[in-house]
Image (cartoon, rainbow, N blue to C red; front, side, top):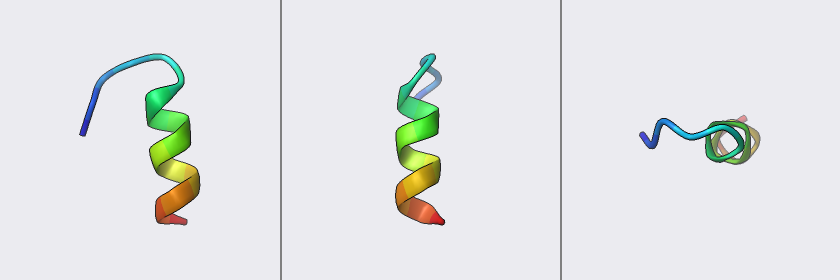
Length: 16
């Protein structure tokens, strides 16, 4: 996973 402010949120939304 990428450690970036925003990318984590986007990935989280897609995973959930």
